[in-house]
Image (cartoon, rainbow, N blue to C red):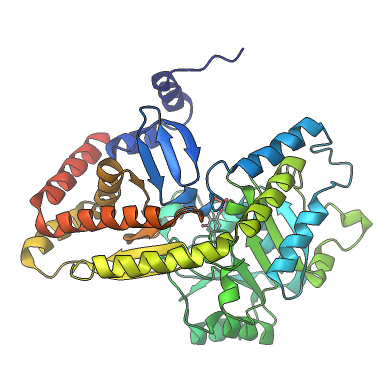
Length: 455
Ligand SMILES: Cc1ncc(COP(=O)(O)O)c(C=O)c1O
């Protein structure tokens, strides 16, 4: 019999043995809840509180929390007692899932390398693009987030993530997102194996490119012998309405695509790198090199089953269409509700990947506290919004990781009009408080105090 710890004991054990700083942060933000049950868009705490998830574990829970059909498939797979990961046979389900992903991604994508995370997919893309082109340079965009393993981290500019971890990969250079001229200048040097780009930048602040940018970037890459690689880790699997966000820009066919997060159904880690036959052949060149790039958990039957079941749920429930409709409704209602507030700069997104951007106020009475909190920590202002939404309104979300002025609104794709209305109402009340009530700023002071006590 497995002993179940009380929540206090598990938190203490977690602090003792895992990461006490994470527990401190959740406490400081007053977000340290214990969850008993999660379903669809809802998270139910052990005390019976109902929280709406507008973060989706950073775009993992596209199919909704604990979807019964995905759970049933995983149970069935376990009951089958088949070869879960022998590393010595041809896994039954991998070909089917790889084929389905490539067919949906389109273009010349035909082969798949499976892995267990987005970072691992990006690492494979780095190695494969080098193998295919014989070049070592890698181009990425300012503000990008590609993962925290050393290769992926080399494709991110923000020093916050890199400081203290020593030298990163050589030959990685940044260019502005959504700008073709700097891209072409770099490509002309013929140093670059790949240009790796998120079709909509997530952590940079839900930044959408101009129409035609991705296709033009791809054409430039091809002209200069550089591979065009899409990081669809957050944007893929119908998050933005289509299977991939790049499908909003016809003709932006990639040489490689990284998928992860939502492919797992929120239950089992799965990542995938989709590639052309030509790229596959440059890596797995002979019998001897048939496992030259692999990973223990790659193609394991539970991950493959989760991927197939998730794809089936997303498509049979038409969750891409739902994301398009609900996203539009969310942006319309937010735009209407927040139109008179000077600190709301922009509301943007595609499908259910949305951002609300805040800006410094011009009114003196608001500018003084805003600037003071920016000085204490640039993330402080946003965290007060996040904390208030969570504590006072039961809404879970976060600011973007590389842009502390943009709040995310990315619920599971099963979100309906009621969920959208609840979010709009909650955010409107927090924004009204921010503009009209000193209590918002007093709250920020309290947060600053707790942070200082914990540093
Ligand atoms: C766009 C993007 N790429 C890659 C990653 C890395 O994925 P993982 O955390 O699964 O390694 C992330 C993670 O948030 C991401 O947002």
